[in-house]
Length: 277
View (tube, rainbow, N blue to C red):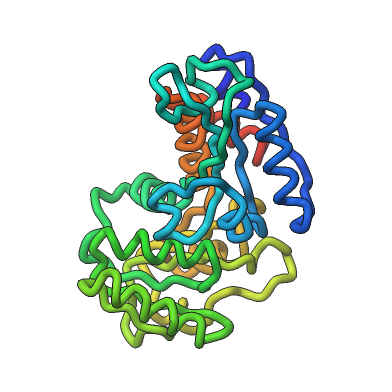
């Protein structure tokens, strides 16, 4: 996806994947900075760890509490910090790392796109999970003006803590831990259940079958159809996987590195080919 985007922009750059153990993350980030990397993407479990490993945090990162994109910056001729990819200063100058989160906006964009919605305002959502991805999604969705947000997690105390946090930051959204007695507009899976074929469903199946929400979104994108999505479609719900979220968070990261609009449709085509053939 990223390499297709870079090629479409005519940039002589390359996007590469590296396996990095958690206890090697700090020197890996520092090494990338010293070697003149333009930036990095981070995935689980590095998104939370990186909060204390970058030089500067973007304001939104403080809200979402996770870093998934790093931009290496240097001072330009006017002494302002600029991304290395677009700065006019030589690479031997001072360099710092800046942490961003492109996941939160991507989930909203993907939901609107997948389900042909104009807005999420006034909607009701059941969110499965209370980890880093779930927290960012919950806080970002509440900012859209949801009427109600129910949070279900294996450890219910974590769901209750997140509900209390949302109540403080977005008091217009009724945030509650536990399943709602009534149906909801949208169910979102922000857990890892579904990555393996033998995983249990992340949702109570009788609740799903009885309440039949309008939409079900699984952040997992491989496999293409998880057990949750199969069950949702069988119950008559409109369902979609997380490929759209992956696309839009990646497109935003590319824009941060290049300072140019991302060629989203080129990236979408490359992503779908890579994921599903």
